[in-house]
Image 1 (cartoon, rainbow, N blue to C red):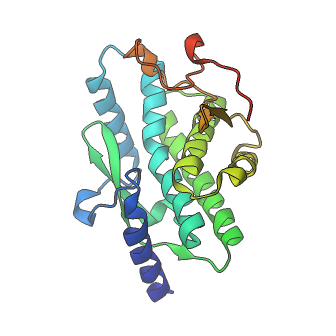
Image 2: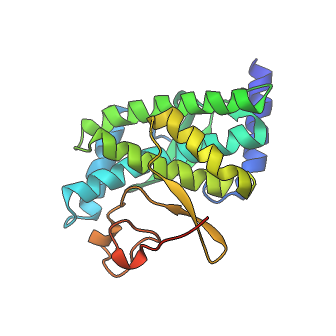
Length: 229
């Protein structure tokens, strides 16, 4: 199994490096392992970086920091390499108040893509559960809002790094959301012939940059449009 995991890891490192969202780094650059003190220190760094931001903004930003790379890594690996990665198989690089960069310790190879997708769903569910416990030790975020934010992240990951054909993305998103959240808060919309994510939750970037809302921001009325897929 060790050799199989090593081969799987090398394939992921070489193949997924073309996606800027998944930046692989060396072990000495990645020492964030979701330990309680590491999470608390990251949250404090966010507070220092945005001293005037609300507690809601900090909680949302903190949650997104904790979950986005594991989601992207598992979505990409299960569709491209029939592999899954548990939270204890990688560490992340922290740069002051943000996480960017993953060091992969090992991964699990699967014979079929369906099996890899299910294993990745299990890995993400475990990661979300562990991260939510860590988050609640530092700040407050409702479980419902955490699910909506994660659902948005899954939608972005499927669109950006899964490699699925456009015609398959809608069903894939519904399947992932039902498995992870027993709900389907996020969807895709078509605008100017581009498929985009219709967000279920606001990242609250408007609090720090009011004139620059995210595309499809649910709190920005000027960005809400009716789209037909």
